[in-house]
Image (cartoon, rainbow, N blue to C red):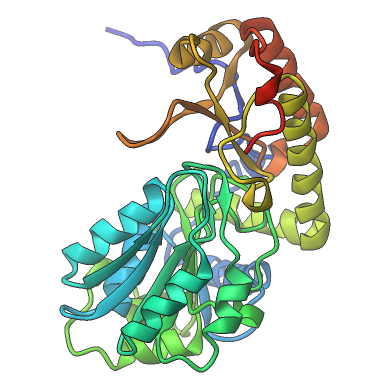
Length: 381
């Protein structure tokens, strides 16, 4: 039986990720494929490592991409930087902070969890107080941009306050890299991980990571062996050393796309790109508040690229998502995990981070969702 080729619909992806790539990023995947051990591909990897160092703003250490998703970037860092019995302090303000806790415990860490309700940011003072009570802690982990709630963590301030500490600073930058200011090297972030499909605007499947010299020293001094797939020494021999040593068969076309996405981000200029995300997010959030919707995140910690909107009483949030998708071809997200409040998660990331995209999303919302009756909801928290 002959089956037709796949014919997926065209969608505007305004959820928590993936975002729609720039057409030039998709076109990069049509370039001639070479083998993962081809010398020309090794040259491309070296260049990509340099470009990733620029987008992470880390001139030293090592910045590469894992052939895996952002969750694997999370796990790779935890597997590399902690050993059984290590104390790890984790800030939890949503689903992905809780995931750090779960993975760290699976690797045998003694986790000190610092939690706040969804919509709030974990105060740095509480994290630092726990570090004072646990001076032997090996790691302090936070989510720079909590995708489940739209909350930004004051990462630069935490890094400055931790200067001189033996504890490493571990940051989930899945939704922050190239979307909001991030200076991994200048601030003192020891391990950061992200993904290809959000503010970078490439297809899903890769996890850019960045390690400080301190993190690399910690890994070199490990007593327990690393998981093979996440062994950063072996990955360095493939990515950086020449002649390269085979580690795994990488998805070559995905790396072409990531290279183009990072190249375009740097061509635009990171400050310009951050400003574009800020403008689009501020416009969307202002218009939502004007319509009477409440936003989940505290205003002082609201991300521009990810907005969590509280579903009004009496509204079926999932039905609204389905109607936006079916009638308007627009994907938005809902709450993530059993503890999530009823919310919609609206993303304006990468190529989609424009006022024009925000207006298209708002027009669809106006057609599908009745404005909340109470004007007192206006203004958010």
